[in-house]
Image (cartoon, rainbow, N blue to C red):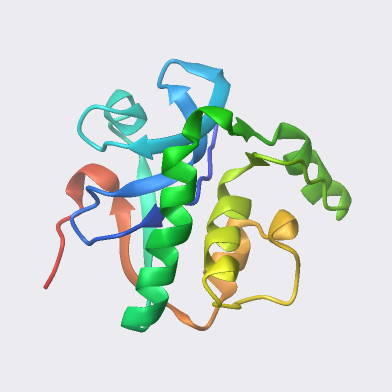
Length: 154
């Protein structure tokens, strides 16, 4: 069984705005970079048994605006960005591997937060793992289970 763990910046509870660094094409795990995921037609649609954990972070309107500005930098230049596979190896070695315009999923989310003035960890974004999100006391668990069963709450 292959287990994949990915981190996303999710801008709304309906999951219609999910951004990360991952597969550009659902069936090709080797072609990666900046992606806007679509739950209905993207990578997750090809894997109906996908399980997920969704956390919520309480932020101010000002922080939301900062995150949107940072995110739009990525959106405008999305073709420039690559998946940082060496950075994933660096995590295992506890040695940050950073390249310009290259990220892995949890590094990207940590980078968006950090550039928006939100500091959740005392480490570089290139060393943040999905497990760091699980352990972060500032994040509130709002859903855990199959992604196809997720229903947004008010």
